[in-house]
Amino acid sequence: MTAAELSLPRSWDEITPSWMTAALGNHFPGATVDGVTVALRDDGTNRRARLALTYAAGSGPATVFAKAVDPDHAELVALTSGLFHEPRLFSSDVELPLDHPAVYAALIDEPGSNFVMIMEDVVARGADPRDSTRPMSVEQVANGVRGLARMHSRFWDERLAATPGLDWLEPFVAFEGLEHAPLHIAHERLGNTVPSVVLGLSGTELFVDLWARYIGTLTTSPQTLLHGDPHIGNTYVLPDDDVGFLDWQMARRGNWSLDLGYFLQGALTIEDRRTAERELLDEYRGALALPAGELPSTDEVWLRYRASVAHGLAIWMATLSGGDAWQGAEISLALAQRYAAAYVDLDTPAALDALT
Image (cartoon, rainbow, N blue to C red; front, side, top):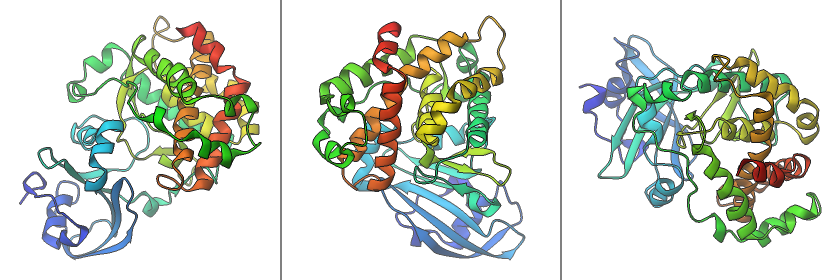
């Protein structure tokens, strides 16, 4: 049995040793799994688990990370994230020139609105998964923006269209629903920790006049492959301070500024972002492997970066308004505060006016 012939398990308990042997076969030929146990599970909008493996023959990873659809959230994930984008990306054989977990098997059941991915447990090679309560250093973020620049320039403009494995990639467009977020919950949680102008934004102003207008700019300029959701909670830091990116479910095509701004503004403390952001934008631009005629100017990078705050602010104000349903309050609060400060520091409305 090959990985392509595997059926999708309905629960982690249905992953048998023979199933896992087939899933790992292309990457670990000769390895025969004789034991699979659930070491950790973390179910949210998707089902996630760390599986511990033992072997009767050959060798392979001691643990793997498994991800599948939670049926209760499949419709929401399809609306906001694209249900099959991540498994399609890692089934495409397209090389991504930045650190990410190796994917051993990616199986899709479109009629059943389900997928299962078996991938590398990056913790096994010393990776340190981060969230907003443990921000990165400036040098770590510099490594992250250089990785994003390598990926963006690899698929910049016509290079993306010339990559057949990505011909399914959808544009990043505004999805519905954010405008219904109960912002009063976010306002109560934020109190006086963010500028009053942010608390004064109505749902229409935040999610339509700012966020949707910014998202509309992503397809009016040269487009590239976007991670689509590179906030700090979807990253890890390696022992050499390189940065890797997890959870590619929102992979899209669009302007590079979404990835760059969303990552940089949320991964640093407010103080470090204020001190280092110009230097970090120079690092990004300098790492773009593009001919001079295609390279965005320093002024364009600064303008689009300033406008990109609209995305982070809208997403994390909406997330904070959802209570603890999507993220812990401490995590959401820290990110909402960082994007709120950037919104004022960078005069995001003026940047959007200049772009649109």
